[in-house]
Image (cartoon, rainbow, N blue to C red; front, side):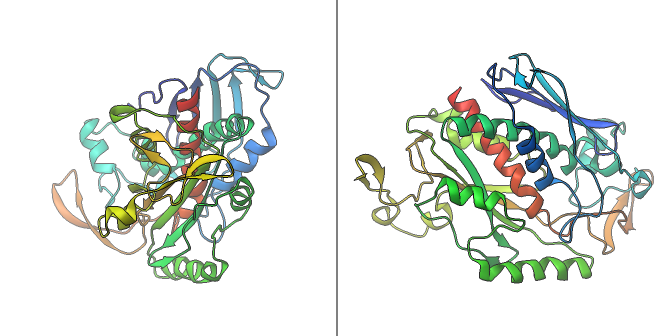
Length: 353
């Protein structure tokens, strides 16, 4: 039911949160590219569960590549990576009472009750692990072309970090990907972390925003209307569970100001055409301008919380109370950073291949 995403680089994901394994198949990667497996493992570790600000479920997220690689290089054949689930606890889930703000009820109706309800099944955030694997490969190919992707936590609840400016460098983005809790203004880190810890103690959760940037993308990439860079990015980003909004550049303020302020004036910088500001996030008319591509992603609070909530019994067709058990993230933003970056990298690679 997931289908295949992409026009030039195609991929499909498979598996369920509590099934034997999850994975991804990537089609049409360039042949002869040598993969840095250490870097892939580092990216996987960024998303992996465990730690003070995430679920206590322990998964190594070790990827086994079963096709498309020979002697460390891509063959051009479909590349499939598998991640085995090793720490499931299915008894924490029940089929009869859908969890609020989860896809349980929708899946139950869609499959006439034949869905795998354990941990969200195929809709689980666990399925983003294969996406990070695919993105790690895309990042390596993009880096050889001088294109780099990185992100930071823009907001946790109502606590905001600084936003990216127009001067975003490869070094800046690389530093962020090596930080366990990446923010641009170190003064807000502790307040954000305390907000997450407080929510966990209360049996609750918090959401926030991630800001992602792509630097080195040449001008002229993308198409207007149906295959604009914005629509392609949005298509992939909204495939990530918990994403509720995507905006580009300084979109939130554009409705409050004048065109004379919102417009990005053209100029010459070090002999190259660029813009003085980047309010449009590096994309105009669906096509890249050569400026950093910048977008914000809104992540809702984790819906699995320990407070008692209202729900319904599917078998009895009556209202009831639900007390969710199990191991859940009080805030998924930290683990979602590499997922958002992976999505962006896959889209950028698809656009230039």
